[in-house]
Amino acid sequence: MQIRDILGMKGGAIFSIAPDGRLADAVAIMVSNDIGSLVVMKDGAMAGMLTFREVLNELNARSGNLGDARVADVMLENPITGAPSDSVDRLREVMIENHIRYLPVTENAQLLGVVSFHDVAKAVIKQTNFENRLLKRYIKNWPEEEDNA
Figure 1 (cartoon, rainbow, N blue to C red):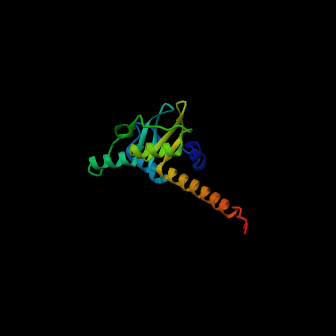
Figure 2 (tube, rainbow, N blue to C red):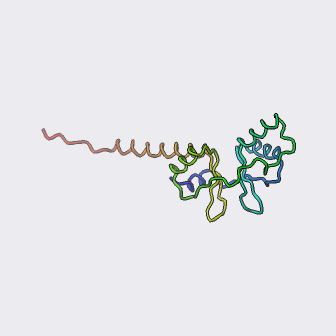
């Protein structure tokens, strides 16, 4: 299975915010859409990623008050990205090794979507269930040995 398969399953919605956007507005977007990250877009291109991790760190640094904090102040610039042709196994390795929960997928500098660790887990479960059904069908239809006694 490849990243393009995961993007196909989850759809192409990309939630974003501008770097000069208020961090409080970013939180509102994430909460209202039940997501944990936003792509930071500037002039039609990805400028970075904002995840709940950066928001929580800033919230902690400001003693619980986001005030006038801007996305650009806390976003992750130059995030690690994946390609649609990358395998799910490779994606999982990259996410675990780099402690990443949300990975933008790009092709020819164009943003195609964002894959979450949750999306990867769902894809792996789906693939495993499919393989399991195939194996059960194969075993069920296994030819019986003839008795030559």
